[in-house]
Length: 206
Image 1 (tube, rainbow, N blue to C red):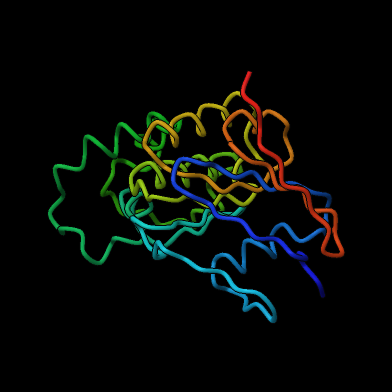
Image 2 (cartoon, rainbow, N blue to C red; image 1 turned 180 degrees about the vertical axis):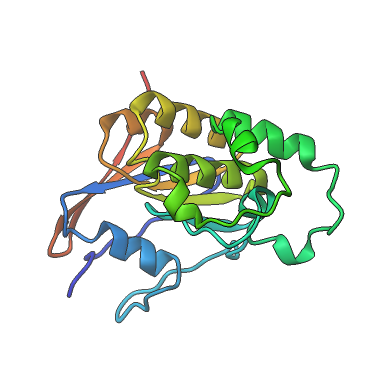
């Protein structure tokens, strides 16, 4: 199927891109191609920044959580290179949990390093899952964050705060979303109409 016809664009640092469109127009498919999960049959995608914790990080609508402690959820996927005995990162992690509105998780889990015997998907609400994925994003602070409906379970006020913090931490954002309120955090909007049709517009700031 033709996803996008004759589109040539560059996403540079500091120029955030918002991708919108009705269901089935190819928004998530485009992100999968950008993320290297799908191959292009025609055209090409050039990545000058590598995927990884400090390069490009993708946050899906339903985040991925590993087995383990609260600390291990925050630092994922850096778990393997993280010191076993705790770290001076404690203050940073606590701060980012607070910014994400999840300070109460410390009490529910018994602390950053307390083993838990539950499935994180069973214990957290959809909104808490998305908040926790943002706490992880704040900790990693990649150059680029690709957000695929990553705030769909959050209120508009919380969404605004999560985006504000990402930008404050220096991340460049590529977002898929429907709320018009997202536009103020982006420089460009790419509207997909299906059958290869699209419209790319510069967002004018008031």
